[in-house]
Length: 225
Length: 293
Image 1: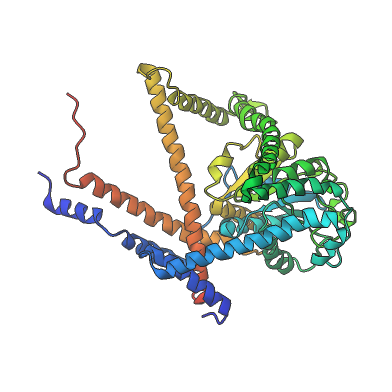
Image 2: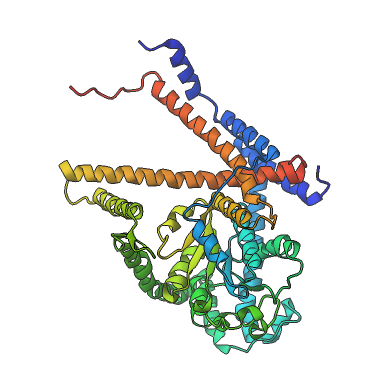
């Protein structure tokens, strides 16, 4: 069994959170509130030292770099950083009702630049490239032999047909009857298979977290594993 | 008429307190955690390209490894980070770490202590591997790195100037790297590296992600994403491939050891699913589907 005080604290908090599986109780509430409070404090400190300090303070006063890293090379001064700093401060004016309207300017700037920047890349990578990857390799050639890879070609055919079936399921302009109804039904079945696979991955993720906690409790704390 | 004993069992199953299920799952997983079974594994079509790309690295080449995860997802992603870092260093290549997550530097510290310093004590930070550190901005950081590394990083996380780092000589921008590895648990992460790094610059991108995130990223495989380690299973497959190709290295199979309890948990859950469906189908009063004439 561990003799480390920190391990005992962590084990106690883990058991408090697990106790929710039995029913809601004061121990769980305590662990929950502690977690939220510590997280908020941690993020605030982390945000200041990892974002605001190096990106604003150090760029305005390069000597400040030595506060966190005494041997650090001093970066060049960058007075232009005052512009994003001012926009950031304008955001805070939302807390003051008489000047709250000024917070719209940095919000508009952030939304506008993000939209403009993402639009082209998303259309290229998430739309055109996806269509190209789905449809383009109709016949898959096995290099360097130059022969057709029938299995890969078959897989590609399944992907193309599956995509068409799923799209047919989401076509609502006309009632799906007869052949089109069958295609839409096939699309629905494929969607169910895809959702099932996604859910299985989600289960695997959650079980991984459970195993990690049990490894900690049984290994690091109790010394059984 | 339905069999009363069967109906009774179905009713009891239907009314079973879910806490019994939690207890069974907890005991089953707990026992397998103590016994630590290790099942054989082999890389899938998604994992093999990641392994082969790193296996083909030339000694001295630098690989950009982005540690885009936090303690929440460390149980799944950390084994990947450990295995890939070991593999890169075994090939004599130079990992250049960067992180888009504020918690990334803490994740790197664990990697440094448990892999870089423990398994490769002869290697030196700054000379044999580089940690550039955390930069806020997500996709904007990737965009800047695509144009000029120095625009984002004046030096490494320990204050060495970029020009003094041997691992970055000849690597002025993202496109100069032979490979980008993003170990990602969310945003910014693998998707941003594909959209704003790999696609515009042509640099091959491979990655690892949580099980929940895997279906989203599989859509990019294999044209935009060259290979992917999906959840703990992907990490286990990678470790198995590494042990198979480099048997003398003797690295621990951390994810492989977790796949035993993982398998036991899945079997228990499947059993519950079957029992739940049996209880549902046999419960009294369930409307039978109307028979067609």
